[in-house]
Every structure is written in C-alpha cells, then in structure tokens.
Image 1 (cartoon, rainbow, N blue to C red):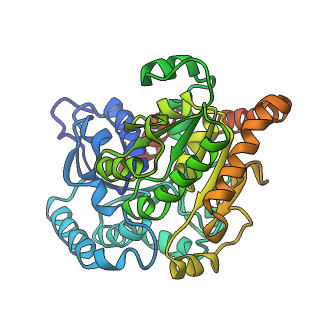
Image 2 (cartoon, rainbow, N blue to C red):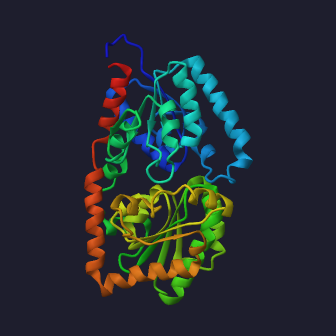
Length: 387
C-alpha cells in the first residue's frame, strides 16, 4: 500500500464471546496486512484489545433460541437499523460479519445491495440443521470464510464463493496442553481430579444450564469427595454464575474464575460442556467431555425439527460418530450428567487406552483444523478488495 493511500476501514460485528475471540484473531491478520487498519462496529474485549472501536458490546447480541430472543427483538432490530444507517453513511471498505447469522445476514444483505463488499466468517451449519440458511447466505455475503474443510465444496454447489481458512482456535490452542502449568496458574493442586464446568456464555444458557450442571457436580461430589470443579465465568455473567455457585452447596470444592476458559480446560481431567464452540475447544484440549443442552421447550421442538444429523456437538459432527456423550433437553438431568461424567473418570484408571484412543481422534481433528487462519482470511479479503 502506498504511503499516501488512505487507511483501510473495516466494519465488523461479533455476537458473543466465541465470535469476539475469532474476530480478535482475524484482526491480527488484517493489521499485519494493513497496519493502519481502522475497525469498528460491535465487538468484545478481544477486539477492543486490538484497537477495535466497539459502538456496542458483543454481549448485546448474546441471545439464543426462538422464544428467548422475543423480549429483545425490538432492541436488536433497532441496533441493526442504526448500525446499518451509520455504515451506509461512512461506507467502510468491507463489512465482516462474525457468525451471529440471525443478526448479521440482514445487515450484510443491506450493505451488499448498497455496493459495500460483505464477508461472512463462519458458515452457518446448513449441513447440520440450517438447510434454508444457505440461500440467505448467498444473498447476504460476497464471500464466506469457512472454518471446516468440507464447507467450501458444499457452498460452491449452491453458488456461494468460499475459502477454507482453518479454525483459529486450532492455532491458538497448543497441540499438547500443559496441565500442571494451567493448574498452577489457577491455584489448583497439582494432584487430584478436576472437572471443568462450562454452562455457556449467554444469559439464557446460564439460566437453563448452570443450576443443573452444579446439581450434577453435587451428586458427583457425593461419590468422589476429593473432586474439584472449576467454572470459567464470562465477565458479564460472573455475578449471576457466582450466585448460582454459592447456592449449589459445593462450597470450597467449586472454583469460579473470571474468564480463562482455556486455562480451565487445560487444567481439567474431564469437562461438562454446553453444546457450542466450547465443545470444540474442549476437544482441541484433548479432554473427555459430556455435552449437554437444555432450552425452552418450544424452542427445542422447533430446532429439533430442523436437525439433519444425529449429532449436535461439534466433536461428534466432525468425527461423524458419538465419540463423546450428548445429553439433550429432558435427558440432561443432574443424575444422568453425573453418571456420564463418572464413567469418564472411571475410564481414566480402569481403561486408560479408551482415553488415549479418544485423545488420538482429537489430535487428528486438531491437525486437520490447524492452518494459518489469520493469513488465509486476510488473503481472501484482500482479493475481494482488489489488493
């Protein structure tokens, strides 16, 4: 870029903690390409740490489910309209929507129709349960950055331009995590079994999952009194999680830490995880897990009718097998969750080869997803902008 050329201007929207992390990593690549890059929109702490101007925090969009979004719908639509108006006035060089398809697609379509190049980072799971989303994606995005290797070919069949860039988390997470270092950083003892409890990053998930996750931990503690439990709390929900944790009766056996999900996953032996990006993170840390989810009954019924595969957890989807248990909706009782966690804990001593086999599958997955995502994504965006 010539010295007197204007700085590139990029608008971005990330909708939750996982999107904030992905966007932060993408910003690293974009700033390496364009050091004077100006970036603004909706984002979180990871993006702000890289100089991003967050006009709204990403937690604003962190609502999941059909009925759960209704009380927030008017406010979300107003934010999207206001953001769209501002971007049409300022006309950034490119708009990048980070996941959050229900918010971003409408905004992307509006900007694309006005001649602003649009990129969507993370293809919606049309191959799993959002079959209709691919047509909406086609109308919304000029280009899609895919995090799974099989997606570009599937999108090409629908006339959608896409590039596989790998999953950023696969480069961030070490191939062989240092468990002892993570325990020391969290103030956990070097010996003894530790269970990570990750009930989600959205308020609706905490409301539906945290109490039953803590109840499962209580049942498990009765059977294994030496266990310790660790919860990485999203800062915006930390007070609510601490309140539920204090009411759980786990006392000093449960540690709530602000953020630090990767340190928690590195430190643990087994994890109880809400379905979502955190399940892939857990797999990349090579940890046995139990995947669980519970939501409003009508929302669940609507989503279940769209499911195209027998799995909902990313590790199982990517391995195309039930490599870890999934306990969904009515099956996700505290007793069932405790039983599933205890099975993993027993296998660690009674059948360590089973744990080793699982870790080998997760290592193969890690290597497949490990790419120079920031560079590949920046290359694709540069081509869209014409250099």
